[in-house]
Length: 135
Image (cartoon, rainbow, N blue to C red; front, top):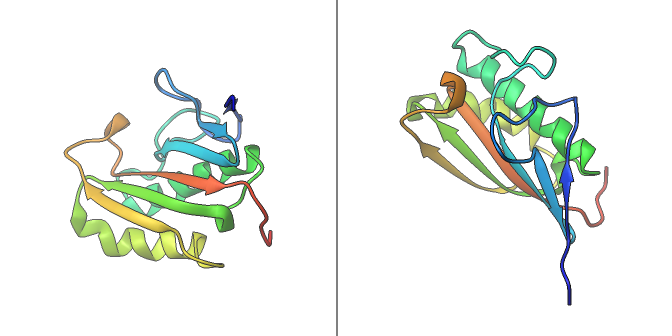
């Protein structure tokens, strides 16, 4: 059986800052690259160092990529959160919960990292299933 993949690109989310796609569809799955708090229009960081504002923007960017792929947060089955400071976990978790509060919440990992692109405080990626949903 031959497999194919399709790159997802949307102007509603920031352009990649390296040699990768915003997301790739492979079969019934969409693999979304990590999103940080870049404004899609200006390419500038949002939040001014406020992890809550950065988290909200990163999730908005992720939702825009999911939408371009024909998916929604309810179809997300796995996320990874990268934090520069694990002490921000509670703040990030509260905002994250609002995005993924419908249906079965995704499996997740949360990792503290030494640095992120553009000096971001948070980055979030995900995997979603493109099958049936209750959108």
